[in-house]
Structure formats: C-alpha cells, structure tokens
Length: 217
Image (cartoon, rainbow, N blue to C red):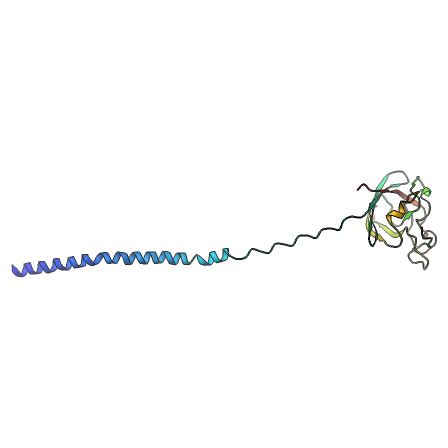
C-alpha cells in the first residue's frame, strides 16, 4: 500500500510539473505569429519603394506660333461669275506668303499672277491691267532683267479641277504696295507661264480673277 501511494504521488508530481511548463509554449507560438506578421509587413517594402519612384517627366509645352502679320484675301471667280475659291496673303519678314484653294478650273498648268488694278470685269478680266510691276522689271523669274513683283509660280490643277498651294513672293511684293490707289487683283491664265517671255510669259487669256482686299483683323 505504501508503494502504491508512493507511485501515485510521483505520477501526480510529474503531471503538475508538465502543466506548469505548458503555458510557456504559448508565448513562443505567439512570438512566431508576430514574427510572421513582421515578415509579412517587411515584404511590402518593395511595393512602397515602387510607389516612391519619381513620376514620368512632363512633356515640354508646344511652341507658340509667331504672331500673324498683315493679311489680305481675294475671292476668285471665273468668266461666268461662279466662285472658284479663295486666295490669302500674309506679310512676313521674308516676303508675302500666298496660299489658296481653287476648284472648277481646267486641268493642267496655269499661269498665276498679281495684276496692277483691283478690277475684275468678266469675261476677259482685262480691267485688271498688266502684271503688278512697280519696279519696272522684265517679266519672268528666269529673265536676267526680271522679275515682276506680281510674278508667281504656275498652278498645277488636277483632273478634278482642284488645286491647293502655298508659295512665297520674295522679290518686291508687299501688301502695302498692293494697296496703292487703284489696288490689285490676282489672275489665273489659260496657259502656263514660261517664266521668261516678256511681258506675260506667253500665258494666254484670263480665265479667273479676284480683287485683293484687306482681311478683317
């Protein structure tokens, strides 16, 4: 009986010791759990670093266009009085910029000039006078004594009767000179300009005309 009681006492003592040690395991597990959370937070650092990257460079603002110079325009009509299109003129430091869009013209090459008088009486437009020539030059860019201030490059009209063009008049033409006491006009001719024959470049008759007028600013 004494031996049995002794064994029971030893067993109870061992159980009590084991229970006393058991609570110490919980903090260790908790530490591991907290450590896992810390590691999880640490893994978020690359994303934070990516968010801290410098933003993409802002594109440079577009350059502003230079201010427009003095402008003028001519509404062009054919021999029947039908609208053919519009031609615009802009004074620049390098000369006069001439731009236009015309339609309902015969296909092919056609001479195109500024004439000395701002009158366009159909059907022949002879009221527009001769080429604008304030400096008394010979006709044609290829002439050694040329060219008229009103001489401009030929127009190349497509099979659809349309032409769009930009050109510079750089020898003597200015908007101020075009608005002299009798004004000026633009004329389209039946044939192409050969750029040397005086006084008209063998350009033939006149098929369209427009009086040059000051544009509203």
